[in-house]
Amino acid sequence: MHKADIIYAFEEQAGKKFVERVWGKRPTFAVVIGNTETAKIPGLSAAGAVPAITDFTPAADVELLYYGRCKVIDGVPVTPTGVPTPGIITMSALQLAPMSKYAINGGVRVRPHTPYFELEGEPGDDIRTGKALKDPKRVYENAVLLGRELAKDCEYLVIGESIAGGTTTALAVLMAMGYDGAGKVSSSMIDNPHSLKTDTVTAGLSRAPFSKEEMRKDPLKAVQAVGDPMMPAAAGVVAGAAESIPVIMAGGTQMAAVMAIVKGLAPNVLGNVALGTTRWIVEDKSSDVRGIIKQIGNVPILAADLNFGASKHDGLRIFEQGLVKEGVGAGGISVAAFLSSKGKIGAKEMLEAVDSNYVKLMSVMHK
Image 1 (cartoon, rainbow, N blue to C red):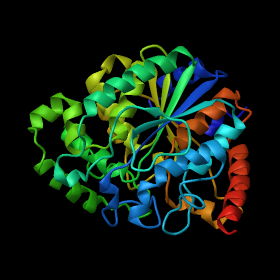
Image 2: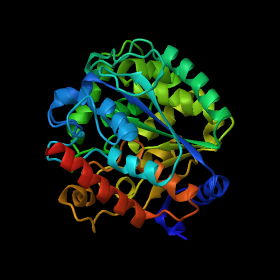
Image 3: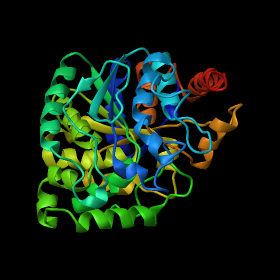
Image 4: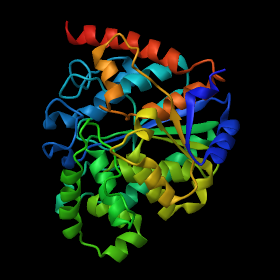
């Protein structure tokens, strides 16, 4: 039994109840992808070797899950220092614990060479314009319908995201909705650029076409002004699916911002929701996921107790220093793999699978 490989990081009793409800059940995984021009602001994201490549990251992440390699780019999405996408964790979990997987297009510039659900969203603009998205309501409504359909065919849903620059837009939407997010969102980098994020958000909020009051009352106005295309898509799927089945929102502080949107639009479903993330997020000194969730409600945080300290590879051991930390649903899908296998899969099995996949991916890159 590996039950110990899950950290109950917030609302422990609710977390244990949630775990009991889904123990041994077969999950379905969905990953929402999007692009925001915000990711191209120098110094904000580690999601690509150069800012322009962030357009390709979400599509490449999805292809990795389907094919075990990427088609839209050569090799795999890596940080500027050569650390692989957290999608390598997601891919490993999906190999260990068989389940259906789906991609959902919230609004990307580069489409993956895989099947995906289309919600008629568009890529997001730089949030400093105050006009980040064109029609988040339409995307949200389509996503609610999709969530309801997915719920008919699965025991519970795990939903992740891949969007570069997403922690900055998360901060923006939290602040627009009146939450205290300053200094609390995480970063894909070791040195979290909080002041750059805050400056970016302040610029966007000052140009928003809506009043503070309007954005507090209507989360979709906050998203339209300073959000990203992943948000209305993920929020809608959660709102639709959690009407009838448990949902693990797989991610860190970005998913916390999505949860704040869900609370504003469909508060009745939050009792069916848990945040699933990684140990690296809940132990991160430069962010505060608990502090964000606490403002939203009594939603449990379940963290996969992953540890790459014993990995044979520098590119994986560096996760222990706080690079990357989370993404592509890595933490939530690891939690789901542990639960669906009734604890037969744990942190040790995950590390072995990730190590082995890392070797394969790096050999493809260096051919």
